[in-house]
Image (cartoon, rainbow, N blue to C red; front, side):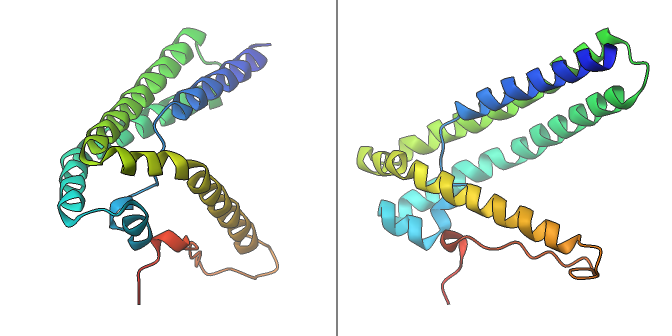
Length: 177
């Protein structure tokens, strides 16, 4: 019964964190303002690109620290969940600490996007909003491809052995030749 309760708690926490992530403004992943395709789509000026770079640089160290905190808290919860006899109060506290760390990371990212939005014109922001679904589909396709590649690399017949697992590069991340 305890294991079932723990499992339900973990599923609930994952569902809540998924909802929280869905509320974050969706911009292309990574340093999107550096990609030629997006620069062209949005008609970004050199000045805007520089400003976006400054905003990203200002926030980068904080993201590293916040992501590390999420990773540590996730490990703490995982360790508690794998023990046969874990105190439910400790599990609850670890789950709460993990969710708070995720909230801090999400809020920080959201505030950076808000700051970046101020650099863009109304028309550029409108184009980002219109392109969100396309970027989401591309991201999902890349995840599927990475998953397939990972499965292929882990086949027992020897194919894909040797630690090589090149990640396909999405078209908008490819560098011009």
